[in-house]
Length: 208
Image (cartoon, rainbow, N blue to C red; front, side):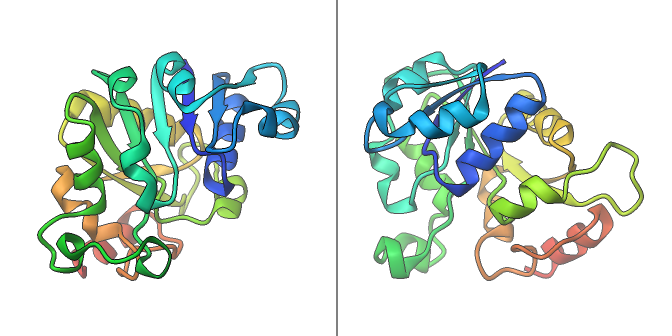
């Protein structure tokens, strides 16, 4: 596949490396312009290129949104129509400012992105693991005590695609359910950042 990246920070760069290693092509973007991504693209190799956020959105069969949460409204809408969007974002009020709807529990971070992208199929994933661990903790399928990562989303086919990607990147998958349940692996929840196998992750999610 071609995987577009809106955001090329630590998580985006790590996922791009995993995607290239798994045989996919990647189109990277950030808020500062494609020319600032030359070093990253060179390090990723010939399967990588740089574009604008709109260009990455248009090019991607699947698109990863990995920007500071406060910037989610700047994610282009029209080029993502009908596409699978992987949301890695986390809400940090110290950085993002206060979002009362999230603080009250009325909305979730991924739910707000889905509202911003009403015709896209948003799947929450890769938000509860450190970038360095994306590159160090992946193991082949069937490895005992393999690390597991959660996903949440409303579209079964979109979740299947994201689950297959996650597996190919080296991690078991626990389906948390609809996107509204994605709060279970948000910041400061029991499932956040810590290393769990699938059974342990299910128990941590249940404690949220």
